[in-house]
Amino acid sequence: MRIDILTLFPSLFDGPFSESMIKRAQAAGYAEIHLHDIRDFSTDKHKRVDDYPFGGGAGMVMMIQPIADAIDSLKAQRTYDHIIYLTPDGQTLNQGIANHLSLSGNIILLCGHYKGIDQRIREHYITDEISIGDYVLTGGELAACVLVDSIVRLIPGVLSDEESALTDSFQDNLLAPPIYTRPSDYNGWQVPDILLSGHEAKIEEWRMQQAIERTKKLRPDLLK
Ligand code: ADE
Image (cartoon, rainbow, N blue to C red; front, side, top):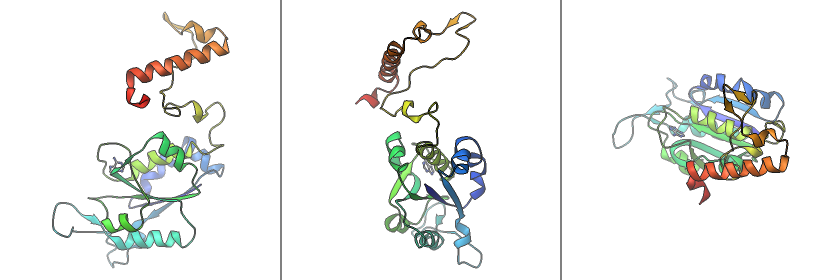
C-alpha cells in the first residue's frame, strides 16, 4: 500500500513512522509512506498557505491552490482509492473503517491546520472525512498517525501470527479477554487456573465468555 500524506509539518511524523511496526512494515515493503509539505506547492511569492475567511470570523483558512496542486500532482502519477481529510467533523474512526482502508492500493491523507481548509477542497477532491474522536487537535497530523497505525498493522503479512490482529479488541465487535504472563503467582495475585490447565478448548471457551462479559460491562453499545 502507498500512503501519501499532505501536511504543513512533515517532521511531526518522524518519530511515529521510524519505530516499531510502521518502521518494519516500510522496511519489508508492505507500506510506502511519502510525506509532502503543502507549502512547497504554494505559488505565492511568500509561500503563504492560509488566508482570512470570507465573511469574517476567527482563525485562518488553508487556501485551495497549494492543496489542489499537491493533490493534482499525485493524481497525475497514479490513481487513488481514497483521498481522506482528517477532521473532527468526519466519520469517527473504528475497526471496520480501518479494515476497509487496509485493503486499499493507494491513499492520500490530508492534514488540516488553523480553522480548517477551504470547503471547495472537501467538495471536489475529498472522498472520505475521518475523525479520531470527539475532541479538537491542533492539526490533522496526530490523527493521521493514528489512522496509519490502525491501517498498516492490518495489511496481511505486517504482523506475525503471534501478533495477529484477528484476536484484537473490536475485530468481532468484542473487547479482548484479559491476558497474563509469568509468574503465575505474584505476591498472592493468581492467574486464573483455567489458563494453566493446558485444555485448549476450555481456554478458548473461557476467553470468549470473558470477552462477552467485558463487552457487556464496559462497552454495551458494541453488542447492539
Ligand atoms: N483534526 C483536528 N482534530 C481532529 C480529530 N479529532 N480527528 C481528526 N482530525 C482532526
